[in-house]
Length: 286
Image 1: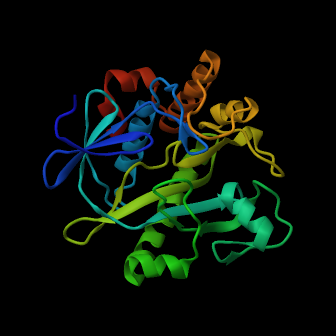
Image 2: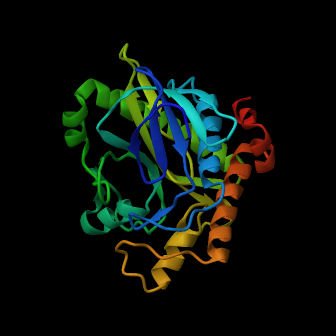
């Protein structure tokens, strides 16, 4: 059992308080589709999320400090600083997909950002846009406009979070593009340290928090193949499941195929063999 006092459970992570200033975050192998945690774990998924987050945390400190203090030898647990988290999800979109595509079809805009007419699903936007969302305790996060987000956070904190998020996305998108991957969109969680410093927390630029598409298969005009749980989601969609709990058991080949997509994302983005990370998680911090 991890040390510390268990204080929270998420769809993927368990959170333990080590003391008043430090938390232990443990990334499980749980996977959720349609907001339901499935009974079948995806082997090593938690290690992929932890390792990739560590990789990005180590390379984006010049943009914004982060909460990471230590990756534990199990490769799925991190010791981090406690933060006072902002009450919004900081979403940046470079391409028109997901709820952004739905909003665009209905209104011609995404979170108050008017967009040119005639854009296709998955099309690259003229420039990345910051599209905040509420943090839903149950169900989906809800897109909100900038005025609503500023009211929730305070104007100064909101503008700082927006600036940091756009800079993080730009850094990640360039890095991913050099490795043949499109970063379509991503979600960050930011908070404040006790001294008021804005700090990046939770996870960063992982397949669970981002849409990663293989660049050599990119074809706007519809959904794209992706390095995330879409493989499992597609199976669930075709299975006849009504999307209410409990979720279905995944077939062995679907679980294995989903793991392979997570591991491929790790290896392509980091340039590090996944087995090397399993042997020495510190390698992602170098």
